[in-house]
Image (cartoon, protein in one colour):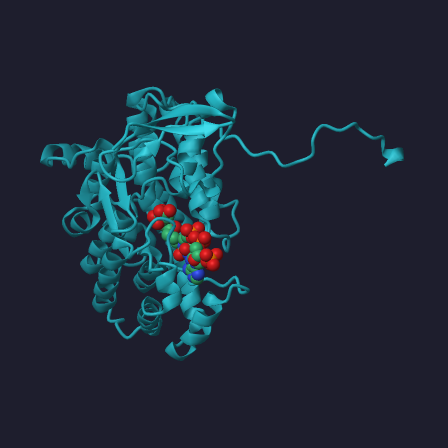
Length: 428
Ligand code: SDX
């Protein structure tokens, strides 16, 4: 493998270094291209651009491989807890027992939010989307924690990281409770991270809430699957915001904004709404036809992926977790699941989807699962964000210890008007 390549422009031969990673595609280092040639690269949507170097997460889209710090997602989902995976993503190694206890205790001791934050929710319409509440209150945390906002201080970064991982589930549960007009439920630190989240969402003061272990175990898996995914749109948004050295809460709030979109984290809500709209197996052919019609902007939500051009490895684990939850809750005859299974079968055998390499992604089964757990569709992306906060934090921390880190400032291909004289209004 060569360590350099050449570009010939306007009769000039420019040498470009090639950087090789541990595994996966090497990169052509174009950092000096503009200085040496006067040319920018052009890559809308960054389909061929490595925005940074990272050792957190590796995806092989053709082989359907996903590794967190080198560990296969399937193994972590089967053998780990979400907090253990959070430790791995942030610190690079799986924790031993002592390190795990220190980390999980630290998270538990930060689960409560300042009482004044409760009043933020009163300003929202109860029917408003919970993500509108989340990106507001997460950003508002920066008004409460000025003592841990210096992003250049490793100790303050650690405190903010643990505060974010601990408080985002509490804020998410508060957004849900507020939207259904029920009282907020305080965290119960005798419960595990996932049990505590379910408890804050579904417990009511009037009765004792009983944790369904099958559901909390499935939620561990779901959070692990959603924890990180390389330089996806929302993680790249967090990195770009954080490159200005703004406080951590503002950067993570930017991640919430990007994740909300239906092409990204909002796809699970859109996928379930699509399955409900299809309604029954007999209507599937009509929707498959719409998805294939170039003049119809309908897309099969939960299908396709920018990187995975084979099956999303998370979708397989998600499908298994879906069966487990529906089974545990006695909902295996769920009509929506029947539509999903038939739609997947048809799509996986249809030439259009095979040729375009469109396979179910993680969002295809997550909606059915979360709906069976009792979450409304608008909460699906909030749960995605609770889990992805860990990945955002891991990348946020990594960039500050990267010597290549600098303010992100892309350039452009300007196609607007050249310089022209101003014309007074009475002469236009
Ligand atoms: C997530 O980046 C990540 O890692 C994201 C994520 C994470 O963990 O962070 O994995 C989470 O966001 C998963 C993706 C969830 N989104 C959806 O399920 C929405 C539906 N899928 C798409 O809109 C689409 O597949 C994207 C946006 C996800 C990816 O699309 P690309 O890579 O930008 O490719 P494209 O839109 O150019 O599509 C390629 C072709 C097009 O046809 P042509 O223009 O070549 O004729 O495939 C077609 C598209 O029309 N196509 C679909 C389709 N997705 C793409 N046709 C029908 N149904 C679909 N779902």
